[in-house]
Length: 163
View (spheres, rainbow, N blue to C red):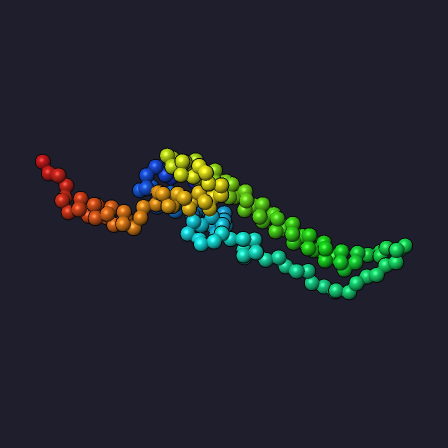
């Protein structure tokens, strides 16, 4: 699935919810951010709980001592560890920067496809809160789905109108 859908589903009625929500879920899965915005999740993911773990630098733990008047000619072990730690932090930052960009992009898509339900998410700050509020307000309940199926079944039983 592409990151931008050419046929955006507009959320106009609760009947549009399953298709609209599936589209949003697919977009979030494609961008690897569903775990952060899933309205069914009981708790939001945190940096410590994510699957991305920082690697620790391995190597010699010996220390280099220098007198105040001399500097070591080659970088010390602590410099190497500090440098690798910086690289790990930089890579982690870049991953999070991509995720934040993807969340902002998906938030924009949701606002564009809300239809008349903007008032539901007007005071929500995060994308997780918006989806949770929309699900509570717009998503049809199980009972509503059962009634819809019964209504369609009854319409099929009567058959087409004949002249």
